[in-house]
Image (tube, rainbow, N blue to C red; front, top):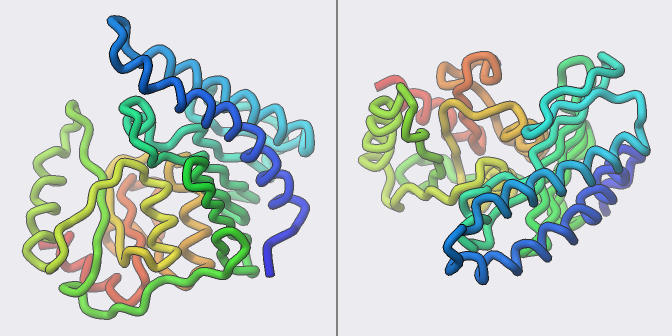
Length: 262
């Protein structure tokens, strides 16, 4: 079985087309690493090229939908429907030639994410989800893990930016979680893939501060449709407003909230 609604098909087509550019540009990164200029400007151009393809494809199919995207910001059309786009989530990995990054697209209807795609072009892994129809990885149904004890779980997080005023809080949380789990905390560098991995049961929980909406939009529906929980650090639904997000397999949600509150 696979998801094949009209909106999902539009999103898949856009991702596939944009991914060709992304894969080609990623192949050039190794050569740029040794140049005097470095690959920074090149990655910025890749980001913008991928974003343009995504927006062109999505608006060609749904010209009345609005857009919120990392690079260009907002395109205001229909207030009910909005595409939420991150053209390259994991740009630092991309920049350094590390093959772990993703295209992320969420579709919002009346303020709720109803469809999402997170596509890892290097591994050719397409995570898709639609409200009421489940979550899938390359057309195979996925579900969150069944681990119920935090100590046995694999937990993923990201790090604060170097100018963040919450660096000490993030470090405290990292230390607290490290003392509760047997497997060292993972930091993989792509929030959307972190959430996709929770949805697929590859890891059990994810927490992070100060993410943007486009970082998490697609991951929200993936986790919900695979049986997981998405909350803020207080266990409430204000994760977008509060800019704290906790995504879990549901069974360790309360235990993770206690650690974050300690």
